[in-house]
Amino acid sequence: MTRPNITTHDALTGTTEVREMTEEEYTALLESGWTEETPGERSASDIVEEEGSQNAPIPDSGSAPSDN
Amino acid sequence: MAVYTITQGEKITASILNTYAMNAGLVYITQTAYSASSAVNIDGCFTSTYDNYLIVNSCYGSANSNVRLKYRIGGVTNSDNVYYTGGIFFNPPGSSGYVYDWPVTTGHFLGNYGNSASEPGTQTITLWNPQKAVKNNLYSQWESAQSGLGGFNNAVIASTAQFDGFALIAGSGTITGTVRVYGYRQA
Image (tube, rainbow over all chains, first blue to last red; front, side):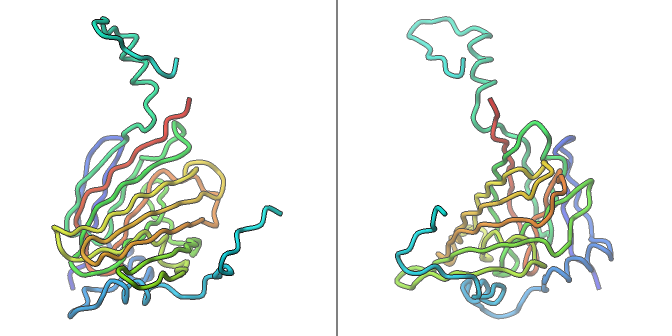
C-alpha cells in the first residue's frame, strides 16, 4: 500500500520537500488517530464529536473563575 | 522611538524606515503552500528571537476532518501523549455550543475543515513560549466555511522541551492549503 505524502518546509532555508512518509512516520500518524478517507457523508459536527470527548468540565452557568 | 509620524512633505530617511522595520508588531517568519499531504512539517520557525508566535492556516481536505498540531525538535515530531486541549465549538444557526476536550494522543486540536477548495477551514493560532524551557500554551480560533462550524480551543503541552517547529496533521486523508508563521516582536 502507498503511504500518504508528507510536506516538510525549512523556515531557515525556505525550501519545501514533498515525499512519501516513511514507515516510522506512517506508524506515528496511525497512532495519532489518523484514518484514511472516510467514504460517504459525515457532518463536520459529527467529526468533531467523534474525535473529541464531552468530558471537559463545564462551568456553572453564570459563574466566573474565582481570583482566589 | 517606537512610533514616528511622517508629516506632509517630509523627506523619508533611512532612520525613519528603520524605525518602522524595527518596531513592527508582527514579523513575518515563513510560509508554505502544501498539497495532498497527511502531515505538514514546518521546521526552524521557533527561535530565541521571539517568545510568542502567530500561525495562520487555511486548508481543505480530501475528506471532512480535523487538523491537529504536534511540536517538532530537530526535524522529529514529538509524539508523546502530552497534548492537552479543551475547547468550545458552535454549530450555527440555532444550536447550542459544546464543551469538549481531546485525547492527548492526537496532538492539539486546531479546528475542522471540509473538502471544498472554495470553502476552506481556517485556524488562527497563538503560541506562547514554544522555544523556551517551560510548558507552553496555545490558543486556536477556527471556522469551517463549508459547514459554518467554528470554535475556540486552549491547549497546554505537558513538556518543557524547547521546540523549533511544528507539524499540522490531518485527522483523515490529506490536506491542501497555505500556512504562514509570524513572530511577535519584542521591544
